[in-house]
Amino acid sequence: MKSAETEFLGGPLDGRVLPVMLGVFHSVPKVYRVPVPGYHDTPPVTLVYRRTKVPGSRGWRWCYAYDEQA
Image (cartoon, rainbow, N blue to C red):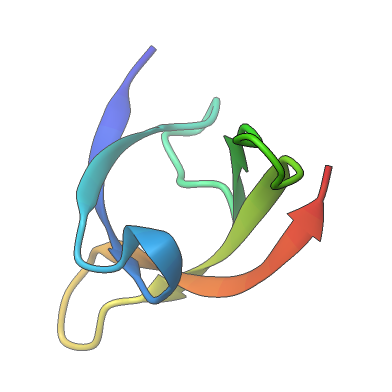
């Protein structure tokens, strides 16, 4: 399966560029969920990022939306 290097903006992954798996038609999904396991007293959460267009480019990036309790 193919992947694309995609930039993350905001939240805990701010500034990172990570590979994101592409869909059937080689498109990046609209919402990307990153599960984060709980440590000691903190509960596990899921970070939710939404796809946005990069101005002046054909690429995509992920903007931090919110945390979900797992």
